[in-house]
Amino acid sequence: MLIVQKFGGSSVANAERVYNVAKRVAETYKKGNDVIVVLSAQGDTTDDLIAKAKEISKNPSKREMDMLLSTGEQQSVALMAMALTELGYPCVSLNAYQVGMMTTSAYGNARLKKIKPDRIRRELDRKNIVLVTGFQGMNRFDDITTLGRGGSDTTAVAIAAALHADQCEIYTDVEGVYTADPRIVKEARKLNEITYNEMLELASLGARVLHNRSVELAKKYNVEMVVRSSLTQAEGTVVKEVCKVERMLISGVAGDDEIARVSLIGIEDTPGKAFDIFATLAKKNINVDIILQSIGRDNTKDISFTVQDTALEEVKAVIEENKERWNLKKADYNENLAKVSVVGAGMVANAGVASKMFEAMYDSHINIHMISTSEIKISVLIDKKEMHKAMNAIHDKFNIID
Ligand code: ADP
Ligand code: ASP
Ligand code: MG
Image (cartoon, rainbow, N blue to C red; front, top):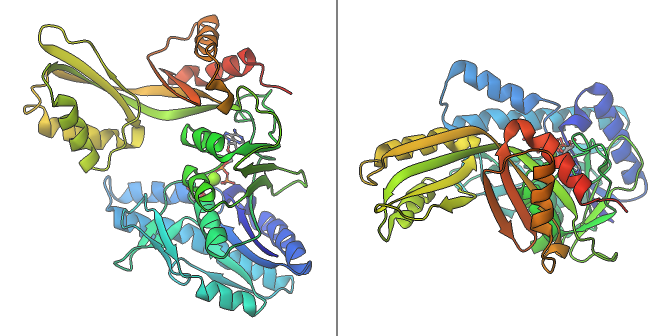
């Protein structure tokens, strides 16, 4: 069998953990499997590198940030190769350049386009355990890119798809995908399986256990993923197209506390204004999430929308540049917000879900600022400091247990 195993930052955080992973990898190799290992940077390395950059420059170039951040993953694969060599196993470490991991050119948030599998295949034929850097790629200018925070999961799935692996295992510091972040909701329960669509929603709505693009890719190429712990032998969660068990109404609760709201007040109430505003933001690659427009009054209207808080400075600059053209009376910003969502394929045909969620907020005296719904999720925007309380209240209300 050809098996891809990805280990996250906490799983390789120090020498002891590196050896723990090396031994697990060796177990799989000893059974006669071909093994490709994808690694993240050790522990808080990526955060530390970002902090180092901030010491030098407030607004460093995105190209140089990727040059810097990609070094974390390179350390991990080299150290793992040394550990496996000490244990007596043949192996080789490779970076994105060496495996031809081609991406778009968007530094900091690149998308994988193609992998040239030749080098990995050659190394597997030589019976090497192949250690590949997660999170990084290269663009058509031969520059290093990164895939966005948490992007090593996506590297693993892309390699599994490109080489038609039999298994893609994502090892992390929890035993699988839970009904909510087990560090926030103590009653959260591990799921045995979850569909791509539900996992995609949870990941996109803040459950950082999987990078959302990894799930997107897995769905597209039908790669079955298993999420499990690198520290225990527990079974983990299978992420796949269809689940055997009867669907629960709700599969999980997710929270995202990196949200900022922008309110544009007193916009002229004429056709084309929303188009102009959001087209201008889209041109700058700024992703907008929830949008709310007020009913027009006195020929003016207000438009509020949310963005990732890391994009707020850029949004402010765009608004500053365009405020005269848009005849803006005022712009208002709030960074102290969080989005809490309930996800489940079973809610499509169930009218009571929204009211139950709002009741949970009411019971806990939590004020809702904005609401957004789709066929399989309902999200509310609330104050950041209430996020944990809200997640627990919703989890309780829906009684998400067996
Ligand atoms: P890694 O470094 O292994 O990629 P991450 O920190 O990116 O690990 O993701 C694992 C973390 O995701 C867990 O420690 C947990 O706190 C968090 N998490 C958030 N939502 C969930 C969920 N629904 N199920 C499991 N873990 C979750
Ligand atoms: N090291 C990167 C990060 O911290 C990628 C990853 O962990 O998947 O975001
Ligand atoms: Mg991760």
